[in-house]
Image 1 (cartoon, helix red, strand yellow):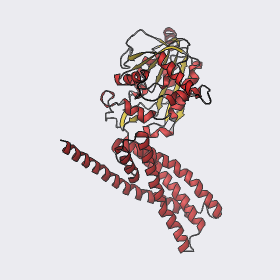
Image 2 (cartoon, helix red, strand yellow; image 1 turned 180 degrees about the vertical axis):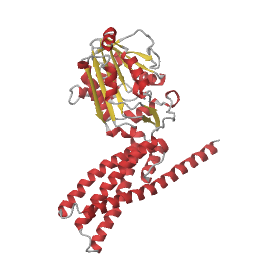
Image 3 (cartoon, one colour; image 1 turned 90 degrees about the vertical axis):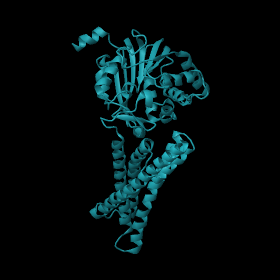
Image 4 (cartoon, one colour; image 1 turned 45 degrees about the horizontal axis):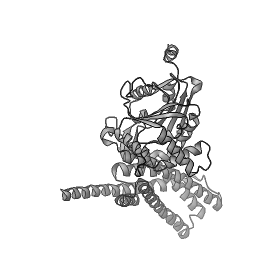
Amino acid sequence: MRDFAGTLSSVTQARKWSATIVANIVSTYALDAAATAAGAILVASGLCAGIGLAGAAMLLAGSYLLWMGGLSSGLAANWRLLEATGTSTSILSKLAYDLTGRRALGSGVRRLASAAGYVVFELAKEAPYYLGAFGLVLASDAISAEQALVFLAGANAGAAVYEYGLGRSTAVFLRPRKDEAYASFETGWNPATYLTDYYSDVDVDEQSTLRFFSEQARRMPCEDAALVFGVGPTIHHVFPIVTRASEIHLGDYLPGNLHEIARWIGEDESAHDWTPFAEHTLRCEGAVTPGREEVLERERLARARITALLEVDIRRDRPLPDPQRLYATVLSAYCADSATADLKEWRLYMKRIVGLVRPGGTLLIAALGQTRSYYVGGRAFPSPFLEGADIAGVLRDHFPEKELTVRTVPVPECAQHGYSSIILAAGHLRKEEGETRSEAA
């Protein structure tokens, strides 16, 4: 059986490498065609004629900024392609990905290695343009050094457009079709993979989220219980609210996620390290250089204030084990929007979450923006392609307009996860049920 499994694995790897080689050949020819055409067109247009050697050199330097912008799109798409299919449009990136995977160096190291391979391979593709352009300058009087530099600048612009187009087309290729099933939370969700993929560092999306929650926590009711609904296997969103709440309850649908949290509360040495997130929260609150003791104290306080781990289900009309329980503060980050791809269903889920906030209470929300799916370990999970207006539309019915804040924050660095923006929202002083109904009427 082991021999058969090994043979099957070898065949699968051979297919992935074959697909990678074919993709490299196709993409290299396509890139050469786009870059050469763009460079030739820029020279032939005469737009840069007479700018001089210094001007042409500055134009070339500026074109590399454009090229790097396009390259970032290609990098993000390449990582998603590797995680989802094990193939790549860069041989060096695929090689680095496979080598680091065999050595079990972790997702962060693997991503960095594959990105380095991708960049080196793309830089190597630049060499023929320089050799060709300056070879013509030396071999013929028909081409000047100024024209060679202009050609190279145009080639970089063409390469940037190509890289961006490759990134977008890869995203479309990986996007689940409407008739295609997403991964199942019950069978396809792995808490450890999620923590490694998303929380090895304090990435820009969480930097913005923690900053927003820290700002809004100053207005939440003090010395009362708070609920973090749909907490996943994470702790970090507790840190901004822990100094205000008398106790905190954490709720999630998956027992495996709650088990990860219980390990952290119990100070299991193998539990995920949330220290960088506690430190970042303190910075958001104004501490310029938080000391280690301050960080540990925030973690100790979080452990002391977390008094209940609840199994919840947003699909039920009353999601909590105690159906009558309401909270002064409810925080729900990347929950309802990460549980369904259906906008109507998301609105229903959001209303149920709002319904957990007592009148006069606070609701804190974070959601993925404009995405159909996000990726964990190469598996696609659903999201309903939200706009800020969608969240504002739901919350406006339950919170006074002047007490409502909704922000959309671009996070292009997170494109490899499937999204490039997040939506942050806060509502204070939730309306009474009767008041909400009378205003709606």
